[in-house]
Length: 393
Image 1 (tube, rainbow, N blue to C red):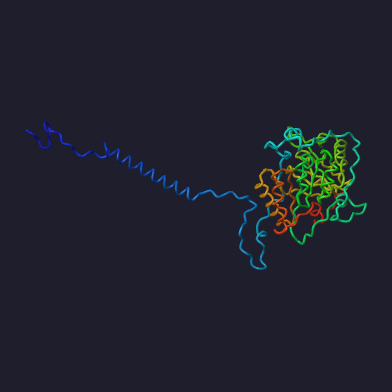
Image 2: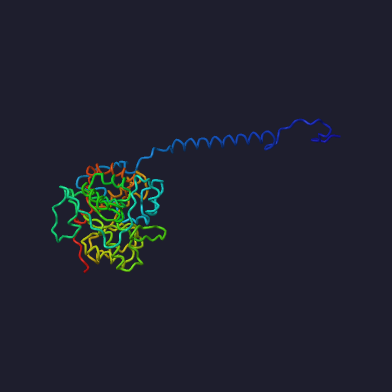
């Protein structure tokens, strides 16, 4: 007898598939996969629409719209915190890079440059130094000659343009004189610039006289010991392990190879400028010759300022390095930083080098500077605008 529910012996009928088995499972998996794909496609489309890349624009060319300030209110740039006055600079020299790389020494630089551009410096002559070349004929724009007793930085200073209460910017181009082609391009820029020539460059007097006749102020770029032992600072560099008499002899060799300059700034020198005793020897020599010192600030530990004040040497310090990054857009951004510092502090000093990107950026930047409310000045104009420095005796 069959019991209810007993199907033994009867033909099996196709029953409903159990949930989660057979074709249903495959169908559900396909639907889930399609849903995931649809969600992912929608998200990707939204990202593509919302994050479309805009064309790159050089930083200094971007105009920032600011609301007009009510009459009598504080200008926008005076309501912001001032930037740091000094930024640590590179320890390495910045020679032009014909092969795309910075050259760490004059020897590597000479090997990299084509012969028609580079003129190798002659070996340093023994003391006594060769006679100084004849001084360039002063241009009509220069101030009347100072009295014979005036210090050299005053006698050879250029007349500053009319300031008219505007912020001042001084552009110093150093490492001049080795790359004759790019150095000549720097001389041809609108000025007044301040051009600093390496003391061991060939035809130093001739090159500096040509720069002076184009209305630029002059410095000598004195090689000093860097922290890195693998970097060659050049002939007759000032080194911390030299006795004071040899430091003085090497410095005098460079200073007596030219004339008509207002002072010196350091080439490299991250180790030497941090040594107070060594810098004291330099400052004593500068004071005896009536020269100023521009600290390139290749180290935050520089003793240059302290020793200059102690010796009564006129002192200036670099605010901005223009071309650590050899791209026009990067140089433009650093020029904009110099403008910002000048607005806050009344003046800014920027140092660059005779490199293609720097020269191209400056050629476009200089002509419009006055329209932007600034005045380009020789370095000594900033020194003259400061209160007299008290000598420490």
